[in-house]
Length: 61
Image (tube, rainbow, N blue to C red; front, side, top):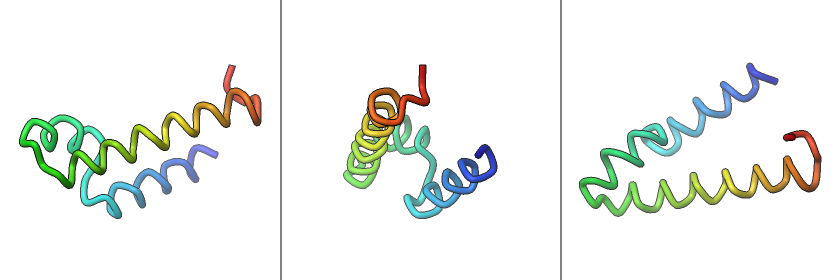
């Protein structure tokens, strides 16, 4: 599971042209539209993942 997660993170970072912290810290500070969209997508998917993990699949305590 950890290896698959790491591969997905790497794929997402290359697809998004940067990592989450790079877009969230540096990109937002520069008011980059691309970083604003990327950060909004990152946060949206993290909220969806947390909801699914806790309430639907019950794998996150």
